[in-house]
Image (cartoon, rainbow, N blue to C red):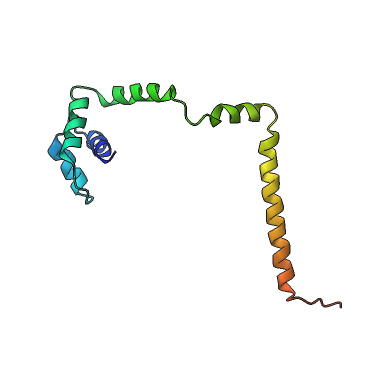
Length: 115
């Protein structure tokens, strides 16, 4: 990921085809030792390709990958009234109220003015 980030930084900086030395200098500027094999692998994979097209095709591929399975269920639950979603903030509010009550009882240091 570091090598990919360095590549993207070089491209965003205006270098349309960064070399291995360019990537090494970017990584070296932040104190990261560059792995030559990873740099060469990346450069061989992106050689002659437009970075915007690579990003677009990557997004298409990632759209078809399941991402934990909870997303569709959460959308369905919120569309059906959101009963579970409404219960969570109510539980948080109750917890906050309990904390406030405890703080108030600590203010009188265990005795009341009217006893």
